[in-house]
Length: 266
Image 1 (tube, one colour):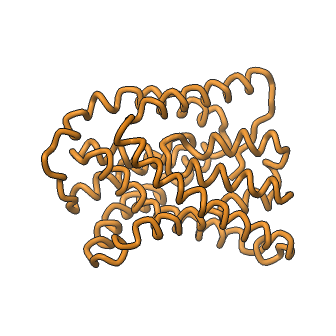
Image 2: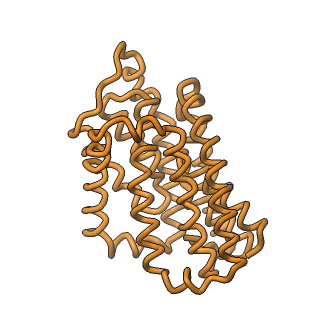
């Protein structure tokens, strides 16, 4: 794996992790054309660099993370359903993880949903006061987040739509999606690193440097993406992301029809 490969994958991670467009589909295309999708270190790399993306959320919203203990209780309440469902459905989820067709179709279906989200939840934006986040709302959003265990279903999109369904504004729903990403991604990343601890410990000095560079790049790109996304979402809504997902899903299906061997990168 070269430094250029590492930087490209880290940019993709930083850009797509918090946007409602699915990082999985992008990683499949990038890794396939780089020819390194089956490389065990590349799979580890795509997991470890999520730490950089996670840290960007903490920096952007640092005041929120030191504001009150209740904030962490809300995150815990939202995270628990995902953890429980993940454990119960692990075998079914694992069966889907190597299925690129599932990713492609989920991108298409999710894109179509996003085309109508703004209109469906338009009343949320006309509220004079932001609805306070309570534990019931957090649990419902966390339960809806579990849908994102299906590869190709964006975690960001699932949690934002979950928030909108609970009368949150686009901004509030997107921000809580960012917050919930921290424990969710941290848990998934730590578990994957534990599962691959031997590979991690046997990594060369060059590979450790790649991991460092990847985390730094993912951190910077994710920081910029988060700041830009909120502003874009408030002005333009979700339609652009919907059309983008549809186009990406179509590209994957076309590549599969052409006989291109696509592989999951993570």
